[in-house]
Length: 364
Image 1 (spheres, rainbow, N blue to C red):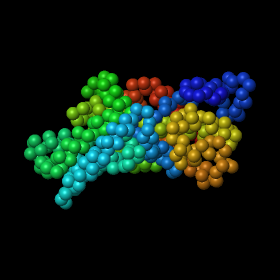
Image 2: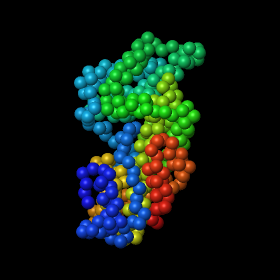
Image 3: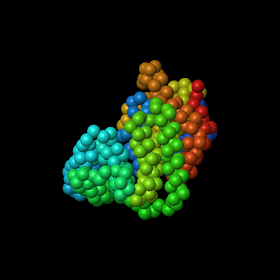
Image 4: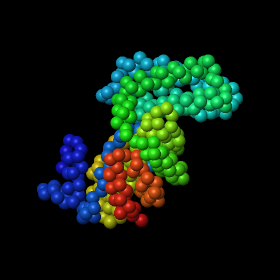
């Protein structure tokens, strides 16, 4: 049944669950699904996410620096100057007693990523922060031209120009940046479609803000900033793609958890621990695999494989609660998730996942 890669592994698991694999022991009857779970694609560009120990979705560690496609020599050459310029920009903008403005916040957000050691930088996140810093800088300069803001100091202006000038070649030396730029070139969305994408991303953020137990605040704040900037700036395609990619990744992780919930809680309810154990292969199928190093993944895996023996009652309750929160959040936000279909040009998987989750409410 094991295959070296997708989609064969997925098809084998589905066939096993349907009882279509002669010679391979079948799972308990409670876990053989006439309505097999949906395919949810692996993570894409936008954000690196994980399930934290409390069951919420949070930021995950970035990919390895030596990933194929990263120009490490160029990154190492540019990083010190870019990091120092970002620090100088924040220091120059922070002079005085005025409360932080949009440009200061964008600069601080950018510096919080670029200040890391090179192997600790999340390049997808840095790309998005760079998009928003450029938009904030453009708006500030427009305001200066209208005499509604004071000009930047010479120190701040020089540091800002340095950051913006270096950011392009730096992010262009990463695989993430190259893929994002390729997406920009291939994008065919109209201004009206980009407005629809922005509205969908903003509605998703508002829904997440009403249920804080689903996604960690720092992830919601990142989504909110990208959604607010979506479709704006001197490159509206870039800011629209940034918001779309980030929202899609959070939605994908939520849908994976909701689908796991629909399978696992239903099987546990129908077949006890044996029924839940038979659903363990579905972790990979449902897209949780890429975040398997996270604490929350460990909890959920134990819950699925042998809940009574592997965990205490409190751990079992927490794992079930985490899955159920994601599941109920999806069910209670029908318009929001239906609207997210616009974020993915190959959105058939999203529609199918939503439909399947709605057909399989969590066990009570």
